[in-house]
Length: 618
Ligand SMILES: [Zn+2]
Image 1: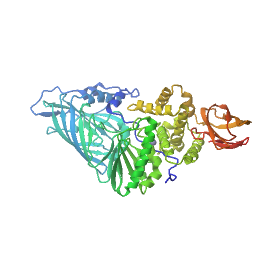
Image 2: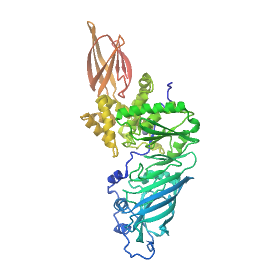
Image 3: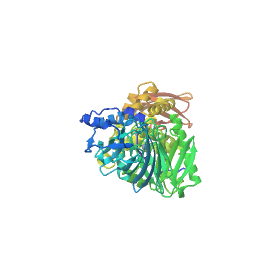
Image 4: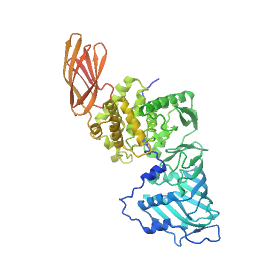
């Protein structure tokens, strides 16, 4: 049974990251000396950080060499990146390790057993994150039974943001051994430093999502197996990877699903946690929800909603499986989770592979109340996870959502109520161009001067309306081809709305700057009116002539539907460039003209009578 959804208009949703790239992609794009940094490379810092031991080997199997007075040396971005790319990632040795780690009271406490192979360089690099109030403590590290005292070593710090950043140690090791075994224990104050993670990502990623520190290793051959222990009812979501539960094993290696630390992870606690697994359209779904919420009826309804959206999105993009596995967490305390985690109430969150959604009473009620949220977050698996476009992703994602939604509610409701309401709101907002709303300038919830609900509305609702207009302009087939090409070209790369425009033009085969310019860069929308209407009867047929004027001078193909007395109608596509005159021969007497009957253009609406004809600008 269909019921009006509770969340009708604003589906403000958070995207955590803007694309999942592997390490080689990131390294390739990160070679960009920062002209903005006033500091120059200090040869002293670089030389000592990358020097190797020349001393003769002593009798012990292994010794660490410590400087007389350990120092903390600051590195600027250029030096840090140079060191990272040309030394840390270029070591001849590689590391295999096992981490057993427990999360409790906001802290990861781990034990890291490792073996270093091919240790021929005699310099061991270690890296970790640091923050003002403590972040990663490496309590104890022993290699071949010899304790390594990190506090006696020089530290090379790259401060990224307000006293937090990455620091490196370079340890000169005198040994004849090329295979070293060691063990370390550590603590990561995760919860306290959670908010730092975005700013600390850059293109340097240290350690695993469970350790946040590591030994250098040749990036072509390393293997770290993590076995996490999580409290009851607790999940650990790793963006671009998936959801980890107690007893999972996570393998970091060049050929595994996860290769380096994610930009974003989060702990999610779901009361009475349980899970359901199923396969849809060749993809594996794991759904987490409270055990009292599991009913076969609810799961079937979820599957049918997912199937609908997956088939619509696959059809529109030509990409049937953006990923091979999905995790969905239905969270009964979602609003609180969102508020505590991000400081505002999201409608749903997509962590690229994991969707976190609100949960009400039972699954049927939930799907009824949050169907749009589910469709939206699922859409981010295409625009967001598969390929990122910055904040522009919200627009094609909302477009996908509306396409799925239009197939799950009655058509007259969709056009006459939902799209009409959205249109009215969009038309009433005149203080933002579309482009201004995807800059991120109006997204700061903590500062009312930097937050605008109107800007969000334009991005989330004028945006998809513009894509409906684009589809009408270029035709269904070309439009699907645009979506497909955009996603394929931007998969594993960095894109934004300009790439969307560029690829649209390439697929269309003609200039579209006029289209994007009038829709993206102005606050106006078309304001159509019908004037100078004339009907003449000639035998069995009627000649209808009328003029369409647009007070705001848009150039657009405009769909026009003319209803006749016999109840039938004819559809016309009229190019309006400020104005256009339409002449038609009709088999019956015209009674009504509807401009934009299927809501493909956001425009000023009006209804009136002209020469006995009912005119509706929809
Ligand atoms: Zn979104």
